[in-house]
Image (cartoon, rainbow, N blue to C red):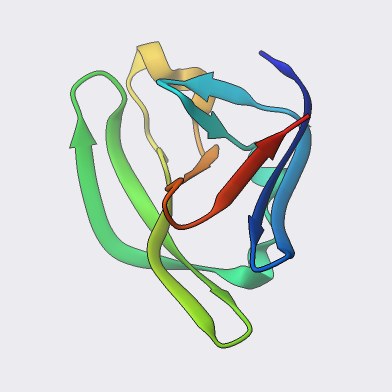
Length: 100
């Protein structure tokens, strides 16, 4: 598990931050407890990854800005991805993720 401070930011608002995270395929996965749930709502979208399993998605709303399906997580990952169960990752084109 990498260490260092990591933040997910939308228009200057921090929607997730942590000092621990997982890095998988170039994406930062935030622990579920680090996500500010007041900005997130679950969607019906699901996608499948051959080694991680089925991903579920969140829409993120900050002020008047709504980013549909901007974050995803694996509620029931396959064995090889158990370490990211319920961890949240963000589309880099929609959310600024910074690590320090």
